[in-house]
Structure formats: C-alpha cells, structure tokens
Length: 215
Image (cartoon, rainbow, N blue to C red; front, side, top):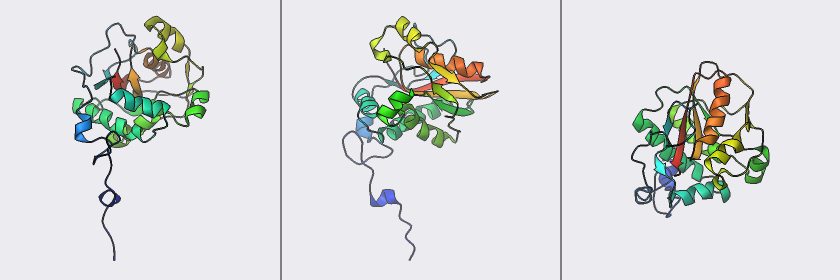
C-alpha cells in the first residue's frame, strides 16, 4: 500500500510564538501582532543607502517580532529563520520587488561570530526567500573580513565607521542584480558597505530586503 499523506498532515506545524496550529512559522493571531510599516519600500530618513537601488523592510523592529529576531540571533532558535524568511518573502512578492533580481546574497558574519553562533541568521532568513522565489543564494566569495562591534550600540556615524572595510568580495557579480538579505536595517550602514563591494565586483544593481526596520 502506498501512503500519500504528507508529513505536515500527520504532524501539524506549530506556531513558533504561541505553540498553536500554524502555517509557515507563525499563526494568524501572532502575525497580527507584528507592526507593519506603512511604506515598506521608503528609504530610511538620514540613512546611508546611496549604493542601494531599493529597500524592502515590511515590519517595525518592535516586540513581539523583535524578541523573535533576538531568539534567532542570540538564543539558538535556528528554525525561526524560516518563519522570518516567510514573512519577508510574502512582502517581497506582494510588492513585486523580485522582478528585477537575479540572485540573493546574505550579509556575512565574521568567522569568530559564526563559530560562536553556529550559523548565520541572515543566511537562515535568506534560504526560504531564495527557495520561494527560485533564485540562487550566492554565499561563496563574500566575507566579513574584519570583526566589528555590535551596530546596536553605536550612533549613525559610528556605524558607518564601524563597517568601513569590513567586507570583501572575491568573485565577480558581472551584470547580476543582487538582493542583499539581513534581519534588521537601521541606518543602512552595514548593507551599504556590502552593496558598495558588490558594485565594485560589477553587480548591475543592489537592493536590500530585511525583515524589520529599526528607528
């Protein structure tokens, strides 16, 4: 006898927030608690995103979403990456933001932080996004070559100085339109520093997709 039941039917998925029944990470009730941005593609006032063609940040960096992002980054909640990536890709699709993108890149971690954490939270978010959009996720040749202080502790000017020269790109991106994925964007200093390196590696354009935007 051949069984055609999917594993998801036998073992219902549970919401990573409340534990109730869910689809793709969060139940509808918990999703409703996340604060959407009125203009998810609007540039950040006073930010430093000159090298970035466009930016998508669907949610405000506030609880309870903030706690879920922290769980992914600092508490080993690796499965949270798929749930957050699903939130992000839904907005990307709704806005039609993937129409002019050829490949996806995740903001890299420095080796010491990667070894400490065991994974890169940006990659965990990027995997379901790339999969849903059927875009290649390009990781090789992109490095965070300098260990930097946490951006959350710094002013806008200090953030820009902190990530100056932090990234290296050792491959060509000739003619490719790249979407850089991260968890949170504030001033845009980190994604701008990476975007500049991608453009120097001959990327045709760079946009940014992040789950949340911090004030």
